[in-house]
Length: 424
Image 1 (cartoon, rainbow, N blue to C red):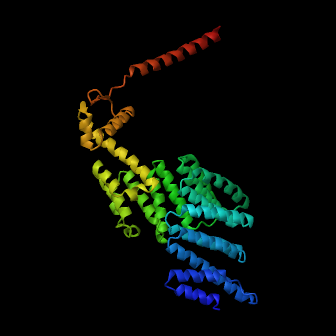
Image 2: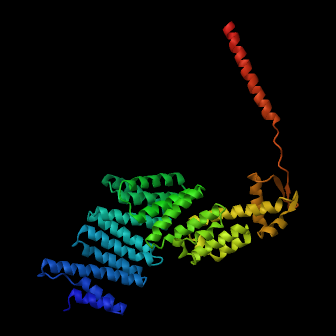
């Protein structure tokens, strides 16, 4: 009977995935030799561990999420014979196989729930924390904010007791992202501050530092402080680019977005000419931001809408970019409407709608909003279908002056009264 090592070599060199799968499963099913020495048993365990990882990678390449889930369940029986630290690494490696499989979140969450329960029974506390942190990340990605916050609360209580600063930093960062997802910016900032405090007391790995900087940039952008946000995004981009991390592209898109939001669309071209950014310049994601910058520079609403249509996937998939571009679209529409209505005292709404290339109802709604926000003074005459624009009324200062005079008279009367009291 061939040894585990021979079977592993045969499986690795096999070009037939089904044959390789059968060999890997044979290695995992065969028990350890009873009469083997300690060194031989360790070698057999290493071969089984390699077979587990290779089988997981095989299912990953086939986009077989259920297969990866089975491998993780298989590994539970195997890991009881290896060190706890090695167990955590092995299960994390197998869970990483899900990352490239599309629409695998549901299966991954089920696997995580099962393994968290198993880790509790086996009293593998650090593995449980690692799995729960990953589960919170998945719940965040699938917008399950309520269960994510409940799990974070439990995790933070346990981690503070153990004083595990590294995982504590990650959980606080996830907490910040969850609060930002539900729109509670005050708590998102507080959680990020806690994450930075925990990170300052340990060596913070570059990838974690990059994620902290990225979240800082996103929260500053939410506050419309695009200059500070840009500096954080630049730090993130520089950090991730030096590690050849694919998520550097996301940071670059945010940098370009900041330039557009700062009314500096002409800086987009010069930014893409720097050494680190040049390799991303021809990608569709970057081209989408370039199209937005061109439309903004020309103040052209039609070009802006065309860019949003042409690059729907690139611009709508990220909630941060989607939110800020929506605000930018509103500003651009407002500027275009102001430019059209300014020369007139009375103008037809239909004409204004034709000029901006928008639906009449949408234009009417925007004009009424602008009047309420006192962007200009006017009224909508819906009977005639017209907009009446007035000159900005001059403030009547007489009332203010009269109130000031009465206040001064009041002070004089009070002082005279005080003096009469003294004389009496």
